[in-house]
View: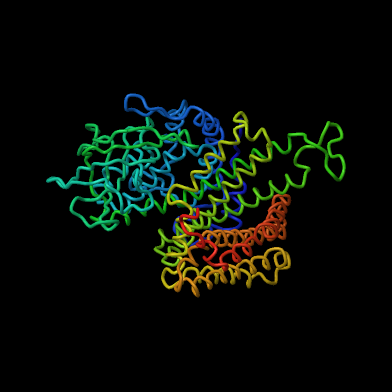
Length: 592
């Protein structure tokens, strides 16, 4: 059975050596010294490796079941959920006014990686709740916040988001779920929603659904969509639970992965709901949850790649197969371990360099989000808005690829369910689809985010890369292996952006046909920047006489691999982008 060990040392390196969080001016960061963060990470590591990881394969094999209208989670999930909630892990980064601990989102991000790696299906129950919490916190009335948030903070009540319907997913303007205004100010919702993660279960006393619907008589299309709070069980004025609301489970979706999460078809039959935010402005309120979720989904790409990589390393060191071409390395055994072979090393280095770069990228993104929210920093807000589709799309695309590489290390055993490696691949696959399929993320990046505010945010990113290179050009430890490759990759990204500006206005297809390549090109540059910063931190630690020289030297070697073997992919992506849309759009629809 697969195992999981929280990478707390790597996390601490990014937090303190690279981001230097305790020196930051972001409110709350000065309290995040190494001793305090280590205590949090170590405790999270224990519960995820000892409690949640063993349940991962249980959830995959058992799945959830629907009996007489009630959904039951896999064996052990309820007990583990109670343990997680009693320890107040869900409320780690939520508002103290409603019972949360008020820690920065950055710490929640680090802990969230551990939860996702150990048991993604389980982690989604609290992850969806945190997103619903964020939307109510941002857009709810004082009465709504007081009524729902204290119970949602630590998942006494959980939450969901309800967007998709059988006939519409991305194009939400086509939705048919309707909301009838009532004399008391509430609404009656009727319709069907599908693919609702954590839609019903036995883990909490109540589920607070956030549901998109159209108010009868409102504008057509997306302009007529509003967002509603629809509790599974009605909440009385004194906060106690009342009668069951008119929402029921039609079925549990049969899925490729995340079997331990109850993905439901939900039927709304004149269910009572309450408007969240303004009429016909539902997408604005829902996007608070979706943007929160998209960063969380990007984290899932990293999390599955990390746990798959850990197990691939164990197997590669243990499995005997063939002999090293340069000479026997295990003379006392019948064969050498897999890890002696260059192609296995290549695969493991692909995985290692990705997960460590992706972790730094996500932590930087989380720090930008903290700066935006805690300091009302518009520049940070604009930059994380630009990077969100890259985090979601690039990290889940590549994260999935890395789980496949980890599975491949096992050879035929990776295809056998007994080893458990296929679960990481199957669980990772959904992250490329939900919260906006990755093709849509790429379109959003090129079609909206790139030109936002006159392109000032992408220009700020280019300037950030340029400044990092200039400030460190005298550092011989970085120049050839890190700075020069980063400079070349950044030039590829700038050339791609310029191409879109020159041809995109005349023929938008030229830009949109290259959107996926642009998202990946951008992602590689971001990881290149992260590796440059990590290399700087590692070399400074070595120069300062750090005792753990092996750790820092390993960081530098891993970074060199990424810069030499992965970052050059920017040239390929640029060539594809500059080829335009003609070959992409050459065939008539009937020719396919």
